[in-house]
Length: 260
Image 1: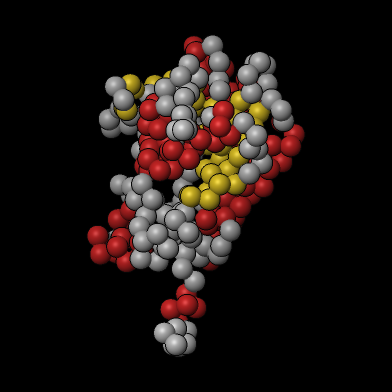
Image 2 (image 1 turned 180 degrees about the vertical axis):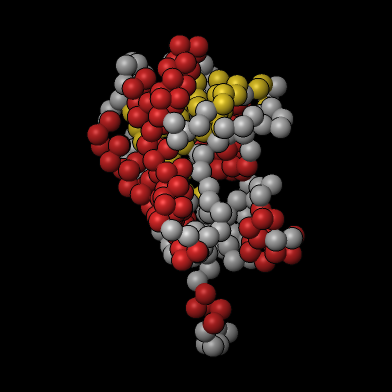
């Protein structure tokens, strides 16, 4: 018997849903039948479309608390409900800790931790008034559980985001389920900025047990699952979507003859 993830008639918001992983998540929700609203500071170069349907776009600076509250109130007024929020917006430039002051690093924390908190509070204010339970999914990162040289503030924010989700899950149950999706490395249009040319991407992919980077659609499918009725008893959880993680460096450095 197949498992159907049907979100027809439901309304989902995907922050940072105009490109990369966010667009992959938005398209997965569209495939599942949901009405999708994506938000970002700037409009996408092309509309986010899937299965003959198009995501609605709204320009929102997630660091502006008043604008965020107005945005979610508008979504509820326009669509009559809000069933799912995926906090995907975030990111960071490469910046060693010693190359900038605390204020510069704090801006990374604001985007990757405070902004999802702001959006979640606004979404909760809508969801808790509804009969049907809502779902909030944080998009974390493997950087939140391992050292992240060059992106330390980002890793710290993602670690905090995962802990925040667990606390929200306890405080807001049963009205809202809150989980964290933890992707590993994903192949997007930004991959060359992080890994270099195709040879670089291939070399990085070889460090993953499954031998490749994830596709945005695969992260999207996991996000849809967490928002669906199939995950109705899942809250406060972290779902790793990382292809097995990273092969430990000591295995390649060891001189043991494994053929014996």
